[in-house]
Image: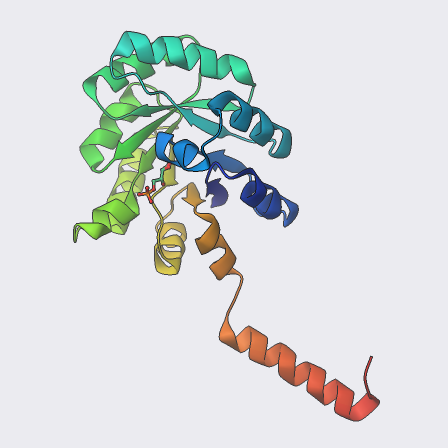
Length: 216
Ligand code: E4P
């Protein structure tokens, strides 16, 4: 499973890119608004850091507007992916953009049926929102697993981005049920590096070494 970072914070993207663990970025209108910066500038900076798929979301709600915005987003850089909400209009736009050879990420997916419609329209990626499902006491990981099975049965090429990841367990479970990609917030990526037994182990190795050979 590949790791993307789910943020529009350029410093966080740079830090994780330097560690060599992320191969793509997802943004959404909330994440862009949180940075309080111009969309085009932020995207341009991100394309200079990461050489991989970068999702930028449309804000139109009608198919025609989504297609127009999508064409502009795709023109920004060869790695841009047009993120489109999972609605009737969104699916119509996905079909049109696919015909134009533009890659899409259908977002706000919460069910197998929605995933089936998006894949049928030719979506490059779909993003099931694990955290938001689990916030409402649904099994988000089961939804990802079911979508993966359904894609495998019918040979869909659409890739699953496990999104709205809030916890270490949701990230681990996404990998275990076969999400192709997980898009992960900075804080969850940071936490994933650590384990109390790793820290304790390093401490013991260092003090044993110092006791035998003195300080380095
Ligand atoms: C997906 O691409 C979205 O940007 C994101 O994962 C949403 O996460 P949230 O539910 O924490 O807002």
